[in-house]
Amino acid sequence: MSSRNNRRRQSKIDRRAIARSSQVRLINILENPSQYDEQIVLSSAQHLVKISQRHRLPIPSKARHLFCRRCLAPHRYGENIRVRILAGQRVVTCLECSSIRRYGGGPQHHRIQNP
Image (cartoon, rainbow, N blue to C red; front, side):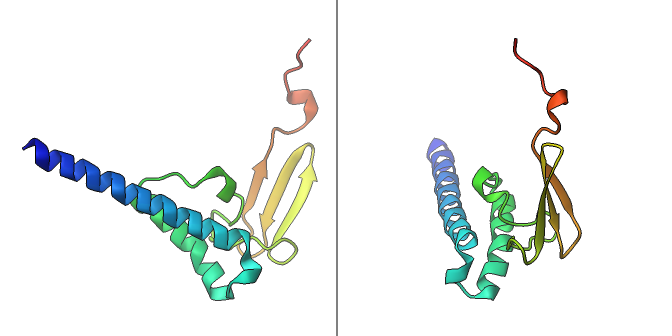
């Protein structure tokens, strides 16, 4: 009975390792969109999210800012997103679905000052 559980555990580890390597490849496509066809770049964000959900892996932090979380469109600065700095926050607006994401802490007077 224990060999069966060990096999299952090992297959789960292998499956997650393959999923992580797929994530790395898809992130590489999203980071260098000029080297790939437009359809491949569009589908890579969708596949990245699907792989992460299917294998219960988090989307890596360096990839979270590469596509819209609502419509999964890859970010192309000046073409389909608008980036503004407003009161210490980076405000990213997707021009395809009008989704707004705010990053950062906000104005400085809300931050804790160290004496």
